[in-house]
Amino acid sequence: MFDFLSDSSDDNSPESSSALSVIGRSSTMTGSLDLEEDDLRVDGTLDGDVRTEGHVHVARGGRVHGEIQARSIRIAGRAGGVLHARDSLVLLESAMVQGILCGESLTIEDGANFEGGICSVAERIPALKDIFSSTQMMSDDPSLQGDSAPKQSSPLPGPTEESVSSEPDPSSSPSNGDARA
Image 1 (cartoon, rainbow, N blue to C red):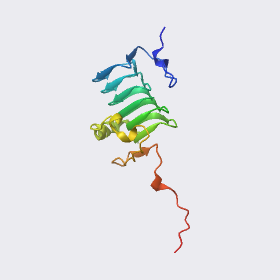
Image 2 (cartoon, one colour; image 1 turned 45 degrees about the horizontal axis):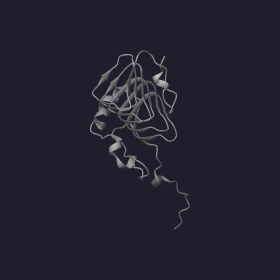
Image 3 (cartoon, rainbow, N blue to C red; image 1 turned 120 degrees about the vertical axis):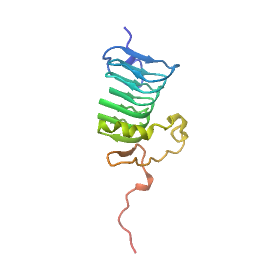
Image 4 (cartoon, rainbow, N blue to C red; image 1 turned 90 degrees about the vertical axis):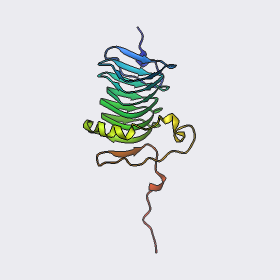
């Protein structure tokens, strides 16, 4: 009757696997959600962790700060924390994400803003979670808003993570090799 997952002009959301929970545009929720196999769509704000065997979709106006563990994750809004998808993790062109991305399949569309690391080993999540446990939501970071200059990312500690930024580093431009004395 109602298809809340696709009630968005920002993307084609995954089909529902079971029941659907929605955090509405004008809603703010604090706390952890254990949804078993249910799907979650966030149009408002969630400050807390999500665990589900279903799908999680953060819509263009939605914000999540916390750990998300789900079968698939699609971000069109803002997210900060550890995002772990057992199948696919997609950052859509309007996404602004700061954290650690772990997933079997990762897609970052052109235009998405990502600052953080990529983890291919699910067992590393507890150690990586500590890195971002005290981070603030990106809305508090003036470098990620509007037309201000982009913030440069710093490498994360440890040999198993990669530092990734969707913005070019002007200091790493290739030289032409014609250095003359």
